[in-house]
Every structure is written in structure tokens, then in C-alpha cells.
Length: 190
Image (tube, rainbow, N blue to C red; front, side, top):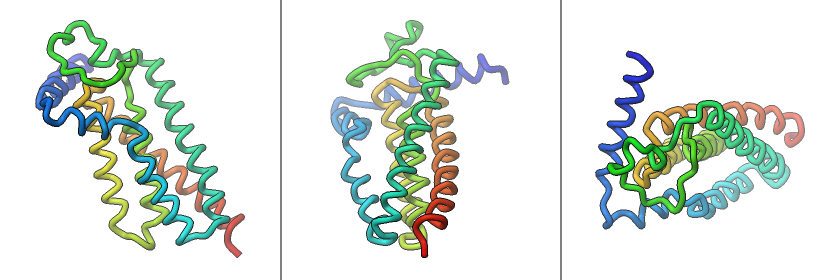
């Protein structure tokens, strides 16, 4: 399969999934895709980390989390500027077929920062809390997939943008979990 064929299938899958949407569900998916919606979830995860690991560990982990999100977000931007793949809401060849309901549409979309950041957070928090809540990581991964799908629903990302973002986010979450474990062993544990 050539890259052109892959992109053609990606576009066809995007159009199929995007056009499954309806006005009945638009507000829900706009809420899901909004980055601020999940602040309460992040606050709960930080509280659980504090409760299980203590204040010193929480402070170290807040710094690691900030670095992780900066890392995934900035690498996403490097890829977007490097590949310059137009988002579906900017692609003239399919403009009349896209259900675009997002508040805005950036220029380039490969790969998705929402998918990358949400998966990094899911993997990181899930691994940190796995000894205490063994099913949490699965729930957080499902949440990340829902956030990723919201980007198709609102018309701003192709499925490959999401797949690559989710994959990179999984890598980032795992990498920063390993870094966090090193720092916790060195600075937080007696």
C-alpha cells in the first residue's frame, strides 16, 4: 500500500465517522473535546496520588507531569509543522463533506495533541496508581480514546492523526513514568 492509498482510506474513514454525528449529540462531543472539561478528573487523579504517595511525591510528580505535557505538546507541534498535513476542516477537496462543529480549526493536524496529551496522562496516572487501583489504567485509556474520537466528530482530525497521537502519548506517558520512578526512589523515599 502506498502512502497516497493510506491517506485516501484515512480520508474515507474520517468522512464516514465524522458524518455519523448529529445535532442531538453535538454539544456532548464539544464538551468532551474541550480541554477544560477534564480539569476535575485531573484534580481527582492528583488527589489520589497525594493520598497514596504523600505530599513530597506529589510535588515531584507535578513537575514531571508538567514536563511530560510540555514534551508531548511540543513534539506534536514539531510534527504538525514538519508534515504540514492540512486538517480535514481546512482541506478544500472535502470541505463540502465535512461536518465541522468545532470552535476553531488550526491549520495542520498531524498528529493530534489532544490524543497525545490525553493518552500520556492516562498511561502516566494509570501506571502511578496501578498498585492501588488496578483497573484505573483501563478506564483512563478508554477515556483517552473517547477524547481522541471527539476530534473526528468535531471535524478537526483524521483517524491516522489520532492513532499516531495516541501511540506517541503512550510512549510519552511510559517514558515519564520511568523518569518519575527514578526521581521518587532518589528524592521521595526514605
